[in-house]
Image (tube, rainbow, N blue to C red):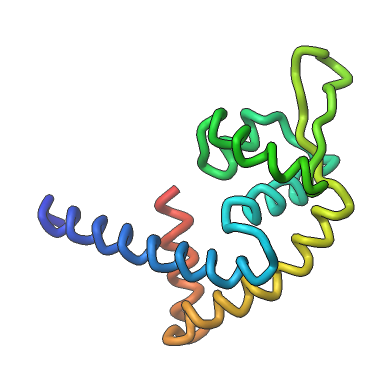
Length: 139
């Protein structure tokens, strides 16, 4: 593949990612959260003990450490997450999913599924599987 073709493909991926992000944000706004907040709740739900160090959470959701801190402050104020001290190291703070955060995540998952159906409606099952494999290889 030529550099020009690869660059064009990359720009096409970026444009599609932007469109999907915008659409997901619209769908999730009906639940009162942003896509970034959904990603945080989803990452915490999947983590052992439903908690992560801030730096690990930032890496998981693709934000900087300061970006995740700015995102978490209002989430903590409305009770979606809480801060906890690490039992192993008092210098380390953990972010934990609350019961309200878990409910919000569950309520939002149907909106994400609706958006996914819309985004992938032109692909059949086999094409969706192929796309999943390709995306996995991009990591």
